[in-house]
Image (cartoon, rainbow, N blue to C red; front, top):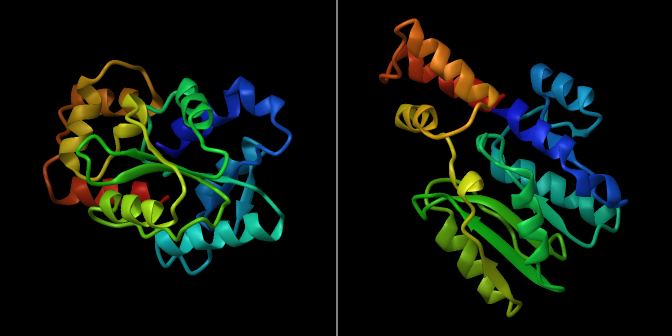
Length: 202
């Protein structure tokens, strides 16, 4: 999934034209570090790995220290994201404010743009969209909510893997899941689910 997300970012034509469009991966996982390096993205070390919320706080501090005027946060478990969706987020971004892209179920938050980069704190976990939306509105700045089909599809449980197989596309993760299906592997809770969780953490 991370490979799918990073490859879309790497091949996004508009990124080459934006001198400030730096991509950084917050991780200390060896696989993720190697992949980020292959794509020539920056790595923000996260040796303690306390969770997504703290990782984003670290990245936000880096943005502020470098004088970045905005930041776009995306997770690694949205493998159907497409380049045009990045363009949609940026084209709807207020001069001073935020853009939120919810998960398909309306509960999670799968992309957040903030200008300035520390406009409001992010708190990820179950049902993060409503708190993020409330925090964005509390700033008094414009907050745009976008529904984007690729960004909306995330992977939190085995049922989400089944959905990935059924959706159009030939991403790396879809090809892998379909190959597993050919060999009769299912996604029932248990060992398979634990394997999936391990891969997500990467």
